[in-house]
Image (cartoon, rainbow, N blue to C red; front, side):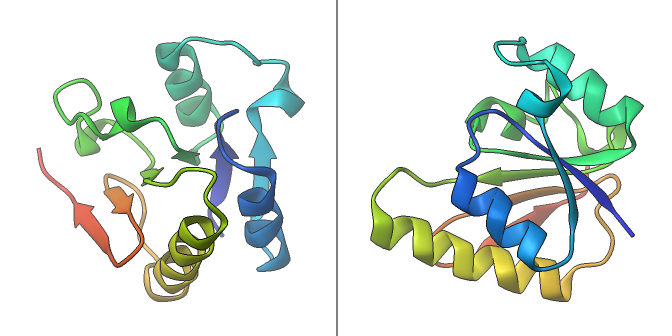
Length: 120
């Protein structure tokens, strides 16, 4: 079963949703990494063999974080608007139900769909 690392910018409701789905989710805050720079967060996810879940769009840059270099990254495109959060959560539920392979994959999740990128 995949392990997940939630970046500090991931909403508490999102972490709760994932945990309620029975997923093993650690928060950056629980690992004393609050305020850590992106490369440190990325390295910790790899060290834990965890899929990184984040609202930070920088992790969607395949030049900086090519899918072939990680255990998986899920970038959530949402803001605090409750309707948008629920829409993204619905798509996230769909992704977590359908997808079983996260390693070497980048997923971008928005209010309508998710996209999967596996190269470079």
